[in-house]
Picture 1 (tube, rainbow, N blue to C red):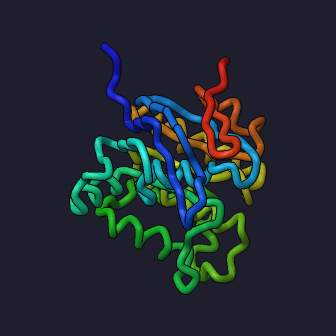
Picture 2 (picture 1 turned 90 degrees about the vertical axis):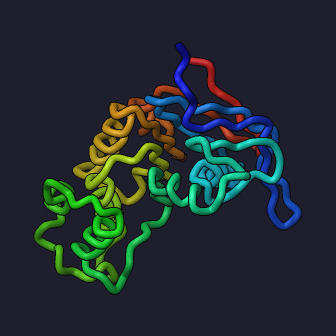
Length: 217
């Protein structure tokens, strides 16, 4: 029996400010998929990621994410979003909070206290009292992955996941992606460096000039 897709695009498109960014997208993401997304700057990769995160809604066609679509009520959509984790190209941390507080606040909001210390896992335990405003890009990226170590999302969306991570921290990407897929979820990795994500992915798509095509492997 075929699995039920976690994400389904049917002839989906997205336009903003009178500009068509994506058109005619037909794509499904199944449980266990690790999807690599590549393409030139401005092609629509981040827009595709935001549609998958339900942060954008399609302006044409169908986009269904964890059974939520354009007709889903706000309270039901909020429940769907709690199953999705997205790490953007730029780290999303609260600069006035410490590194420890940045991780613990998200855990408290989710109601999922970690069983192990995620800051120790990502090598930041000794700097836990640093304000995030003092932290380097690499440290902030580690904080974001520390948050991901406290729970397992159904959908994991990563925009340039290796950006800012040194060689010692790069295996964090493998760890969180592998755990999501092993638990029946799916991951989408947008990257300008396909060689770094190729060992992880099960499929690859190309976004070019607003159109999505799947690589035949």
